[in-house]
Image 1 (cartoon, one colour):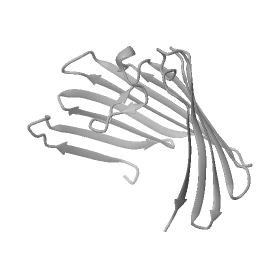
Image 2 (cartoon, rainbow, N blue to C red):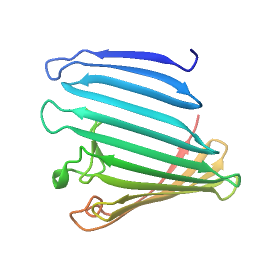
Image 3 (cartoon, rainbow, N blue to C red):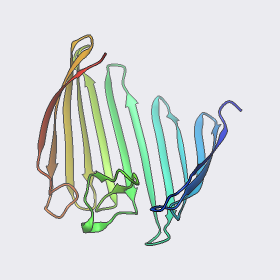
Image 4 (tube, rainbow, N blue to C red):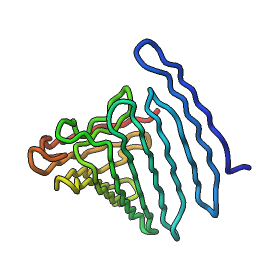
Length: 200
């Protein structure tokens, strides 16, 4: 049907890594997009599902995956997400992440390895939120934050975007970290940034 399908993917390996293969079936039931996937990625067996739909006028999405590792412990990851756009240009986002594949204190938080795409965290439970508001037709303010539930640390990312010209935007923001030295976000120094983005 127009809202259902099947994807089959195979990626051959080389001398450094094993090959990978996976399949995903998707459909739509009563307005909700649903899919189930399974595969073997570099010898790790993976099974997962995801959904996306609405609760009233708000969006509701989720993903879950179980990984059976050839080397190391088995684990699962779950993400639940809710967002809503008010008519007066206010945007709200709330997300929860459970990362059963966390690496404890040996992990380097906020690092996503380029080779595997693996999400690396020290702890397991995280709550994220986002607020966006159009201050004027040309200026928008956004504030995103992540709370490390297990370690009690916080990450804040306030930012503002201003459309100077039709094809030119000015962006300024900060990455602010709070927590103990051994927590998820405590070890990082605060960072401030600005940029010009030209579209052509």
